[in-house]
Length: 472
Image (cartoon, rainbow, N blue to C red; front, side):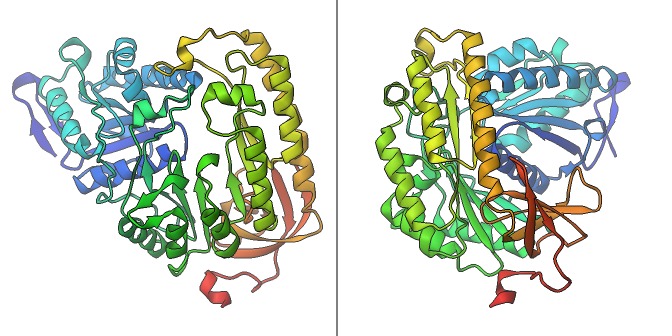
C-alpha cells in the first residue's frame, strides 16, 4: 500500500489496484472486455470477481436497444451507492452507450468518474490513473467536486491489433475481433455512429491472436465484426483468412458473426463448404420478410436475393444451421409486411432467431420518421413471432433425436448437477451426464430435444478426443 493525498483526507492507495468489469451486449462487447482487461492488466491492474473488492468498477455497454440502456443506468445507480462508503472508488462506463449518450449518462448518474468510448481503450489506463488520483486526493465523492473524465473520440485507424486480450487459460471458445466499425448505415442502426467506419486488423495480427488462443487451450474461435465478412487486408479477403487460420494446430472449429447478406461472396460460400474447420452454422440477419420494409431499412438486398443465398449455402454446406435477427414494428410495417416475415421464417426454417421490437435510436435516419406502429401492436407481433419460432426451433432440433453428434464440451451444465454441456458443430447446446473435461470432442447419442437444447447419453470411456490432431 502507498499513501495518496495529504492531511486528513490522505488514504491508503493499493500498489496493485483492483478492477471489476460487467459486460452488457453482444459478443463484440465480450471481446472488448477481454481487450480492456488485458490492456489495463499490462499497466498494473488486477481483475477481481465482485465490485465490493474493486478500486475501479467499469460497465462495458451496448447502445443497440433502449432496454439495455435502462438496465445500465439502473445498475450504475446501484453501484454509485458503493461510493458513499468508499469515496475513493472510481466508477466508469465504457463502450457504445458511453459513446452514444455521454451527456445523458453523466446527468442521470452524477457519480460517474470516467466515460470512455470504444475507440479510447488504449488511453484507458491513463484515464483511470487520473481518476484515482483525483478521488484519492480529496477522499470525497467526485460528484460534488469534478466533472467526469470523458474520452469518446472516434479513431478511423484504431484496431487494437497490438494490444493483448485477457483470456482465461483453458477457455474452450475464443472471441477474436477482426473488424471494427460499419459502413452499411442501415436506417435503424446506431453502430456506425458509435463504432465508426469499417477497418480490418492485419491478417498477421489475427493469426497471431488465434495461435495465442490455441496455446491457452481454445478449441473454437469465433471471428467478430459488425460486418465480419467484409474483412480485407490487402489481398487477404475473409475467405482467404478462414483458410489460413484453419491451418493453425489445435483449433477444431471456426465460426464468425455477424455477416451481412450482401457481403456473402461466392468465395466465402465455397470456403464454408470446403474448409473442414469452418462450422456448418451461420448467423445471417434478415431483419424483415418484406421487400418494402427492407428497402426502408436500407439493407441492400431483396427477399428473393436473401432466399437465393440461403439456397446456395444449404446446397454447399450439408446440415447447415441458420439463425437470424428480425425487427418487428419498424416504421410503416403493415400487417401484410409482418405476415410476409412470418411466412419467411416458416419457409427458411431457422434453427434460432433473435427477435426484437423496433426502438428509435438517434441519430439514425429512421429516428426522424414517425414511429407508426403502436407499442401494443409491436408487442403482439413480437409475441406471435416468438411462439412461431419456438415451434420451428423445436422441430429443427427434433431431427437430431436418434442420431450421433460430436459435442465440444465447455464445462458443467448450469442447471443439471452431474452433467456437462457443450456445442454441436451447428452450435446447438447439448447436455449429457458425466464429468467429461472441457475441451474434449465427444460423440453423443441424442435421446431427446427441446426448442433450445439436445439431451444425450454419456459417451463410453475413451471415445472422446482432446484435439483435432489426435484424430488424424
